[in-house]
Each structure stands twice: as structure tokens, then as C-alpha cells.
Image (cartoon, rainbow, N blue to C red):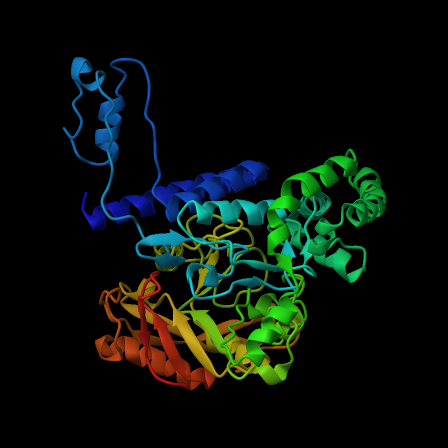
Length: 501
């Protein structure tokens, strides 16, 4: 198959998966929906092996020939086809927007992206909540692909996600019904809640079995009461949890656990470069985001100080990372949102949307591979929102911007940029502070000419089409900081160093 045909097939398959995901969610089969989404994300990130087996002369070869659109590729004669194991593979792997190194795509969850560079010491700071099972599985997956994970350091002060947190997270979302927040159900919020309540278990507790079991026993009394009396669920066994965490996880993580604050400050004192990598997004910030549709931490730049243990004096450059369009996972206000042909949690209803809007919404999701890395859920897509970005510049003291996924706009005849809102007939150019105003905000768009050029091979500013350069210039003018880097594909070499800050 040609690369274009392969891409079209992938896009169509993902569209079908999206629809099945929506059906499962609508009938209350959320666990099955999550499994499907997870499989889809893994399928996008790496080549997939499919085994087709069955009785003689039941159409196996014909099915494969039809799927790859190559009649006659495999022999269909029973004596020929059944006598051997036939292997069919495609050419270059389909790229997705994650970190891609030498043609391999790495979907990062807990591991810092620096793990992919041999000269970098990767650190998980104290502000992160850690599921040891997820972390170890990710480490194993990366190690199997040749990545050296022995360099990883994990803060002993980071808090542990426990089965109690995951179960309560899941049950709370179910209880909220239509008012659910759209969490990943991975226990992140309940873990941060225990941290704030000063009853949480930390990573360093794995190194002292006595302390771990004592803390867990006290926590279990409260959590099992909640499970039984609030949610009518059977209690969890704290001894079983302790055995798993201490016998399975602790021995493997022990060598990675340490004082990461001291490690970072030693590097700073030695004059080394230190890069702090944020997670989540500005408008998922617990204090400054679209509350209550937020995460339970502070992803704004100031969160670095508490999340890594450094003072603001050490931060001399703040790079904001934004897509050339906007996405959101889960519920919450989204002024520039586009409707889609399939459902997403919290997504814009299709009623009242024209065919062009739905086509564009599908385009951003399918071509941009917009699925949550952790949850596998479809993201809600929309046009670039300069109003929100202006506020993000203020909140983070951004010195510059990196615009990613500009290539996803390559085939669009027209691109839109939201420059203001209308709220009850008033034009506003700064983000409304009151949530009701934000929910009523109607975007004011500027339309710009598309460039109709494949940007995937562009690495120099001179290679950007005039219309693409004009789009970036307009973004700069609206938000007030320079766009210094532009992503033109998923590979770490697919970018344009547009200008110095």
C-alpha cells in the first residue's frame, strides 16, 4: 500500500474505533471503552501484530487481501495457503504526535521525556503522584526498546497512588452521573486529597515496611468505611496491598528513590542546565484553571518551585507549549470547540452544527491523533484561542512560545484564530474571571488563508510557506511573546527554530 493509502486506512479504522468507544460509553460499559481506547493508543504508537487463524477454506486469506486492498496478495487455494505461515507487513510505520526517535514513537506517561537522551539525568519530582505499577510497566516497555532507564531518579517525597484512590475515583465519577468531571479514574485526585489531608503514603515509605504498613492500616480504616457506607462496596484488603507494594514494587524501585531536591540543586550549583518539564496544562491548574474541571495540582510555571523544590530565582526562561489548535479531554468550558461525528466526554452536541464544522472536528482528532496518552479517550478539538493564551502568558510569565502540530493544518483551505469573545453582546479580549461568563462566551474569529503545503520536511524558517508564516506572526501579535519553535511533525528533529527569544 502507498503511504497515503495506509494513512487513509488508519484514519478510517480510528474513526470506527471512536464510534464503538462512544457506544460502549453510552451503554455504561466504561471499562470496556477504556480498554478499547488503550489498545488504540498502543496500536498507534507501535507496529501491531495481528494473527488471523481458522479452519480450512473459511476466507482468511481473502479477508486479509480485502483489508489491505491488494487482491491476489495472498494465495487463496487451500493447499497452498494452509500449508505455510504467511506474514504480511506494511512499510514505514504510521507516525503519531508523541516523541519520535529514529522512527520509533514513545508515548510518555510518568517518565520524563529526558529519558530518551543519554546525556540527561531524568528526575520525577516531589510534586508528582506515582502509581508504581504504571511506572514499572512503562520502564519495562522502554527498556525493551533499548532505552536506559537505570538513570531515573524518583523523589522520595512524591506521593503514592493506591488501589483505594483508584476505586474511589471510579466510584465518584459514576455517582456524579451527568455531572461527572471526566477524570481518568487513575486515582490522581484522591491521592492529592490525601496528600493535602496529611494522611498520604509517600514513595520513601516503600523503603520502610513497618512505616508503610502502619500508615496503610490507618488509611484503610477510613477508606474501607467510605467504600462500604458511601458506595456500598466490599472493603479492600490492606495486607494484600502492602504485600504487593513492598514485595513487588519496592525492590525494583529502591535504587531509583532518593533526594531529588538535593540532586537538582547540586546540578544548579555546578552550573549545569536544568529543564523543568510540566505536565497537564495551564487551564487544568487547580487554582487558575476552569474549576472544577481541572487536575488536582498546579501545572502553571510557578508549580515548578513547589513541585521540584527550587526557588523562582533559578528560573530564567519559561517556554509555553501550545498546539496550533486547541484540545481538551473530559468536561469543561471550551469556547472554540468544534463538533464531531462521534461522541466524546463533555463534547459539543452535533445538533445545530453544519457538515463543515463536523468535518473539521473529525480532522483534528483523526489526523492529529488526539487521544489522551494515559486515558486513551478522544480529545475535544477546537480552533486556536488567543484569549486563553494571552491569559496563559500572564499566569506563567512566558518568555516565548513553542507551537506544535502546525502540520495538522496543512490541508485546510482556511484557518481560524479566536481573537476575542462576545459575552452577552460585549466584546472581551481577556479571559472572563467568572465561570458563567466563560460558559456563555462566543468566539470572535479572524479567518486566514491556509497554505496547502506538506510541512513535515520543513526545518528552516525560509521553508515555511508565506501563509503559515503569516499565521504564526498573527499569533505572536495577539499574545505578545515570540514564537521561537514550530513543530512540523512528531519527530524530535521535525521542528523549525524560527527565531531567538
